[in-house]
Length: 440
Image (cartoon, rainbow, N blue to C red; front, side):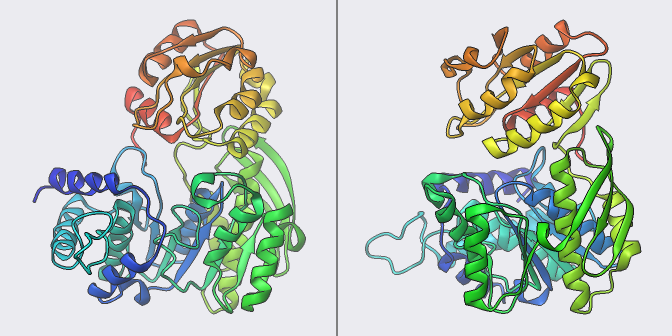
């Protein structure tokens, strides 16, 4: 099996969709001798910010000298980005080796379809995400990882990652998302997110309102100590710009002055505080972290595709905001820095199951010109069908794909202007490819 054949097999499993449930993934991990039980872990869920928070906590572990695994999704350019050790993606040869083993296990022990055939007593075939999750746990165990940061894929309660008993759990926030799977209200979605809470395991959250109430109730029921970030920590952003931000923070263990975070947007400051809160809980459990590692980890944290500047003159800014809550955080950043952006040209490509109208209502009025495009995904929305876009956006044009959208934007942008590519991580990934920018 080659790497191309391995990824072709893995991606072919997307035909099974996203199955919420743990029976299949638990059986698969049993066949692998439960590698997830060998590595101390932190479990990171939430609607927005979970990837950034996971990346920052992973960087803190690494700065403290721990051999650190990081499992996130989705990837931008290459499948290997999903599984990292000390920042390095899993080697392609290891993906190939592990995929071959997993493929054989699936053939021997599971049904050949997403649901068992009527005469079969085998469990359904693992999905793409279930197999990828098992691969991550295998890789971390084989490579003697000392701490792993695991990002939830979808929801929490029935997500394939929810087979671990972590040292700390995090739910960054709760907003409306994936309502066809998770529920129609914030309370229902909050219950799914709260599903990662384990008895006695501390939970960190920056969630507010209905989501916070669900988490508080669930934590009390399970005897899980809860740290609410806004109540336990006070922070002030001293400086904020495209390069990052400087903040002061006071918490229950120590005071931090002049913390530098190379991630733009005030929402990232809250994500950083959430990561620090998780680190401090882990310190109380005996992990050797400390202020120096926390500072250095935050300084070295990277999370591509989130308010990432990839070019100057004109400035090209990429952001993976793909739901109204993400668009609101992005809009807040744009409004704060609007004078320095000059003319703003929006290149917007969204998936058709997202609330694109709410997103454009937030972002469209801030742009001088909008180019609608088609993300390279089966679920990508046809820009011609975004018929209400001109209600929120001025000078609307349509491009067949993000590369064409970028070309149109660059043709009209002046050297001091800003091109913003957003709406979906698929759109951001296509822009990275078009610009030939690698993912670090």
